[in-house]
Image (tube, rainbow, N blue to C red; front, side, top):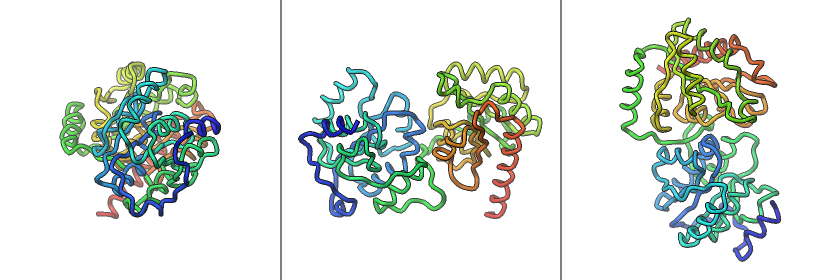
Length: 354
């Protein structure tokens, strides 16, 4: 990767710059690259927002993957560029499209990914920024916004601060903007599910079991159903949120087995975010939907391994983790206890604030 990064950057200005060197610089067109999953792009949003706030008049274009482009409506100052797919035709389309755009600054939002190196270098932008200097890809870049941090969100939060942009107070979290009309959309969805306005509402994302990697992270269906049963028996309104068709089938099985559980209809990502903001807590594995709930300020409970929690868990007092070496060993009792504790802490803080 180090050799390929140097090869891609042949003929480009390799003179290193610091953030201070950009003090009087005003780019007109900025390219952003992140080609992997929804959660990865959401974790990158503090840096994206900082770039927009530092250069508010610059036109910003995102080259994303097939899935994470769904985040773009939550970043209204972004334009969507071509979709990146891992096939030769997608690479060729980008090679032909990028030089014609004349970007002043190209930013890889994932320092260690070769796709980011390729796209940034193919843009021929004079300034090519990475979040930190990865030993594998550093030759392709000439400016670095931050430093390596094992925690994804904190990594981009630090890079944003290094740009001289003041972010909001509180723990680092994804930064998005909900469309104004989505409050009404969320109200309609919850009313359609017959959920009382003042009820305690908890959302649960159905874990993906699509491949071996996701199956290793997922907790068993029986424990998931037991959690839903336990929460419903406590008078809590439970809303299940599936992503794929297979996850919807699993959610439907739970709804049939647990009277009182609700199934969220198919929504866009921005509509789901509006619904999440009206919930009292969100439960899920390390996924895009967990980071989406964090972005709108909903308390979260992450289920997974300690290693995943160290890198991906939402930060702050209104977030919890239930971890085990193998998620199959996470019992419904532990999850329910953690949810009850989280709801109690959220209520206590709301009362103190009032």
